[in-house]
Image 1 (cartoon, rainbow, N blue to C red):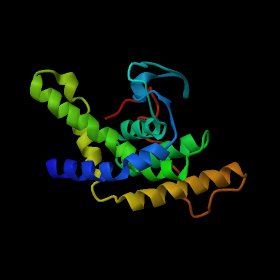
Image 2: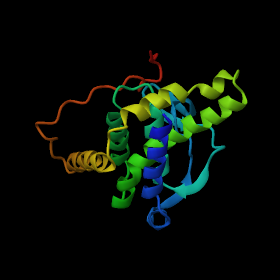
Image 3: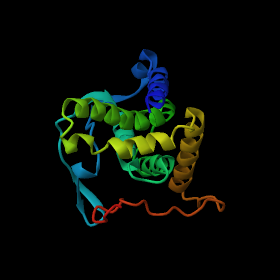
Length: 192
């Protein structure tokens, strides 16, 4: 785990250089978009809670945070990242530079969670709350260990092209498999 964490930290650092950070669009972001901070009416998100972590930062980080959290306890984190991106692109645009760092922002949030969990658990070993994302987070990172940033970007560009085609009213590619519902996407559904 330590070797994987170190490799991902170095990849993250390489992706988010000062030059890259300066060119990314910035805004006030929530910084903690996850299912426990969303209010639903049926299947529709009707509100967002908990603005305590809100900061002025790279706008793409909110998308990465959401993708990272939704990947927890899922079989295919890259599929989740892609579907979160698909939903975002149906409502907003991403610059090429944002698309290029999205993968790093998504795994970076998961990595941050597992590292904070390890540090907090060492300080308070009996506090179960502190460890709640640790194992699911490590499972996500383990599934991503062989995904290269280039492969992730290629997949994200394909999603971007599909959504762009949908917006222009063209049908999706015939060879495109039907998307399945993500486990846990329904706030009333119990995850196993």
